[in-house]
Image 1 (cartoon, rainbow, N blue to C red):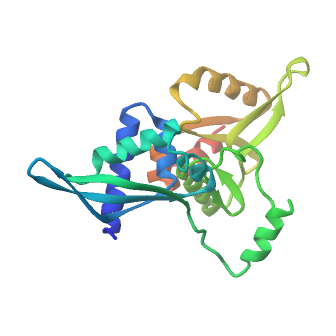
Image 2 (cartoon, rainbow, N blue to C red):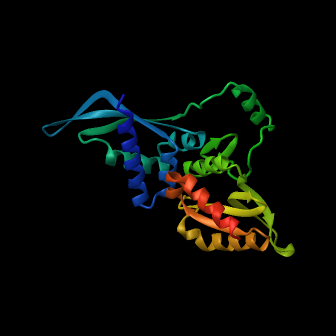
Image 3 (cartoon, rainbow, N blue to C red):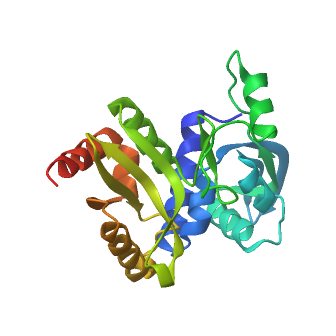
Length: 248
């Protein structure tokens, strides 16, 4: 096996390759996985050089596995191309395999999973089906969202992640979704994680229209934060959001 730090370096470099090429969906899926690669034992002669064959393994949630197990899927091909571009020189990918990542367990793991399987466990609505991450029986689309949820939890506030609501005028009622609906000292606000595949720049006008709808229904503040900042400094983002909400 390779050094875990080298695995992460290759994963990060491949994700950056995809982002730079405008392939944010593929980058998001790749970042939901853990990468390992190692020599498979074969070699290939390229001129007077010997190139080493690699086995590349990606392990992630089921949503990622369902895509990656299909070698013809456009996202799988994009991810493989990105990895081949950043793997060490004089190597090539011979085996590319996808697996479902094993989950950490706690002493009550069987009871919790039984509750979820029977529809008893508490979970949020909107992220299901698109979710790539799970934390405390709640579904999220990215690690940035998970880190914001953990920061809100540390702050001790009431929050609803990725929950869909019903709103609008009587003649134009519709379903809308907020990344995080937060209640702090009796004031309601929304924290949005921007820059994810689910909030691309092309959706800016649509997001603004949705923000206005929430404000019309009494949500005091709707604040947008960059996904990278949410990932790297979640507590700072949450602290800033709560201070802005307090001022409304």
